[in-house]
Image (tube, rainbow over all chains, first blue to last red; front, side):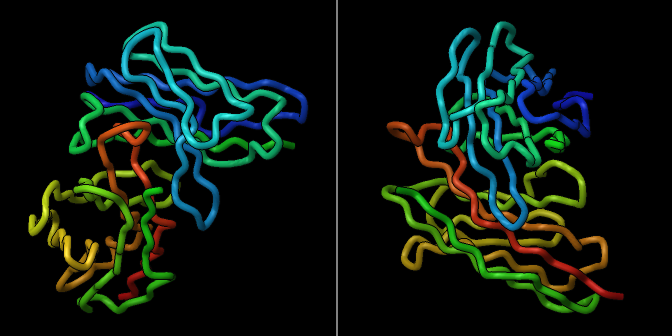
Length: 114
Length: 115
């Protein structure tokens, strides 16, 4: 079955540590995205990538970094510079970036800073 | 900039009741409009979408019509079930400039359906 996998499902981090969230897709999609979800709020875009080896900042990129070395993988690193990293992180992918293209979401990673 | 406003929740209904969740948007041009659903602890699933004015998206008994004149995309279902309990997000996508491919979400509406 095609889809998007994210790991781990739950992640705990001590203050001052960097952590990396995994996102893999086998849908052969060109575009991939990272969103952050906070309680009672909609999703906010962190980074997106249209093609391999290229990515752009979204609305809330500060304190985060990404890479896109393979088409199917788009890992997100939450750095110690991110002031309030506790949130639910969702990865998505789409065939392209036309406005009608549907974005498909993974199951998410819940990050908690201790 | 682009924005999406959903009716505030939570919404609590009895099984077989009629559901409406209001969604209005602000965007230039002609965005595509989406409804996503999120079940507890899971990612988002596309429920339905519409890509041009007067289009009606439908899926699993849910419907929404793209109304350009009122900039709205209200979600409706004639008879809800307990299994419809979830969080519903309205979103838009608009091509051009820095908005290319980006989804702008509303804040989400929590729906709880009681037997």
